[in-house]
Image (cartoon, rainbow, N blue to C red; front, side, top):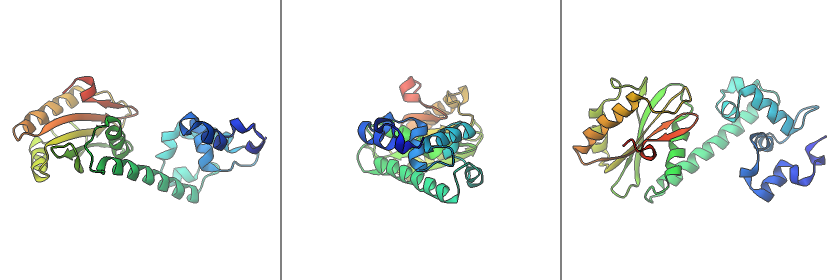
Length: 223
């Protein structure tokens, strides 16, 4: 049975319009993106099959072109469309953060950091430099590779903070393993940076660890 023959309140598009996008499952959202199924499968059936093939929605969205286009019902045109959608989402989050208003919504900040760092295949340590009203000045990826006490240099972070005339900073780094739980090294690095920046009156507002989940040092009481 095609989706057009389903009851109206079960069709993904109608369900989205009636109840909002948050009410849809991953497969239903993906089906709207796919638009059509393949012979013998509705768009929702195909979406479920693709989610199984790629592991989950994130696995599909982060797949490279070759792997993505090998999926049933997918191809170069769909890959291009998806990359455009993802970039629109990134720019939306960037505009939310850069709007010029103080950062008062921690969820927007966490989502922005996750969007920038989550899909790196290696660890990246980044900083969001803020002015004295906690408005964004700049985002920079500072270090990459294995993030430990030897690879994150407080002197370089202090230099960048002075360069941007920052009054505060939010750090973030990703865990490619997907496990966002802060390590002992993460806590040690954060304290070293906090102590170094305190010497030039720059506050560390948070350190966000990005994995499959997002962990905030501030929310954990680790700062």
